Length: 387
Image (cartoon, rainbow, N blue to C red; front, side, top):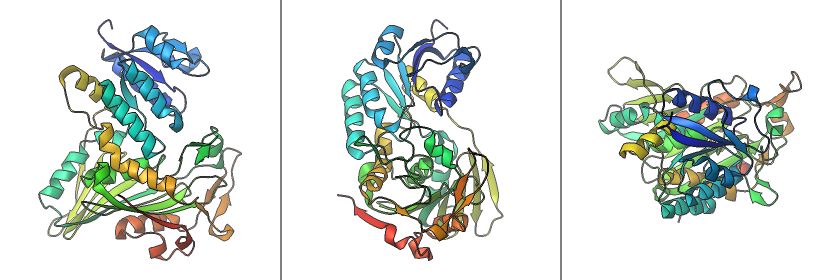
């Protein structure tokens, strides 16, 4: 443990619990040591996973970095805080694992990425799906012509979230909070991996790879942001369309599908599972391992291993975030386009009939909801051309 890299985790509740468990896993391997936790309210002993010891706890991130001698900071805090916390760590020479989305606007992303580069520290952005061994394997299949000429890439995410999901934090489901951008929408946060993974498979991850973005942002829930949306990204490579909802009838695993003129490749990115379907062959299924992003950051610091998700590799994704930010406020779905599924107070959720099929059709045909005949989508359409 004396040679393990000291780590501070900012934001240990909610999704931060996943990071706590992952740090414990790496601590058991002798790779890292949890030196500090930054939370407004300290974690109780019951909230700390076993074998993590007694890390220093403080609500003062700056002081905690100094007192613990942290070499890596894992930042899993509300979206609007990402840039300032990342720059605080960078100014102290602390390397960073920053949860996705990296920032709520392209300007904030550039401020963060440029500041980190100037400080000379390393930063990994937490798109865990991009650590999957399936990503380079699919790109190899595409390059070898396994499914012929690539026509485009679709993404589909049909998830469900109860109304209580939007009460879990003051920023949940908001576009802004106290005059500060948040952009907590379905495409930019819960199902951001579908967008980022599609861009990665297309080899179009940098900001300059994006030439145009069309969005249709809608909401069934009584929130500011979008919960049922689609986006089409025109790139220097394949066109990309992602349909997503948090109002599914039957929630299912999200996926990305690469369309070729002689077949298709489907990637269930949460399971690292791939289905290859091509002319003249039977279907072939593959499962791949995954490289943990914190472990990859540790290896990068130790022997120069390439980072899997450096900030610049999320520039195209941030162009999508910016298009969502600049689009008109999401259009409320008409009252007859959704219904309330009753349950306990924490289980009530809004459901959009037919949305599961519409999300799948968007990924399959590379068409927007309005082009697929959804009458409520046309008024939500917005187009932005990248300069």
